[in-house]
Image 1 (cartoon, rainbow, N blue to C red):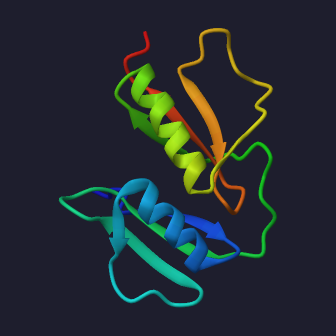
Image 2 (image 1 turned 180 degrees about the horizontal axis):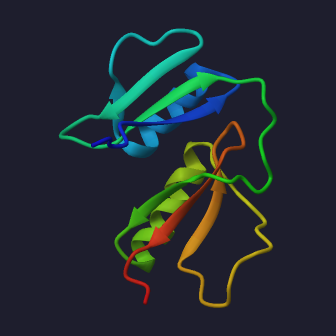
Image 3 (image 1 turned 45 degrees about the vertical axis):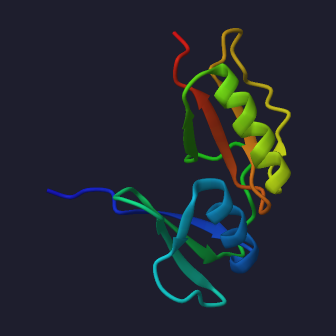
Length: 122
């Protein structure tokens, strides 16, 4: 049976993206970073790898796939959003929020969209 081993993000600048995502997730490079590729892994324990690859494709305003990062509750979510923004993420003016949204949409330094989820939200 297959399993997801790595999610690959296209980025314009691998070292910049690696600096953001290692700080954001507490990940480390699996092996020495190359100019156009790196695989990031959890510093401790098992988990999904995040691979960063140079891409010249334009960022999609409404991507068909994105990362959901889980926070414990609303306070944790707010704190994580502020931390991620301080690392270089930016808030996205998302026009599709439902009234009771449990997610906040951000973009990484390359413009890749991701969400921070309040997992305590019903």
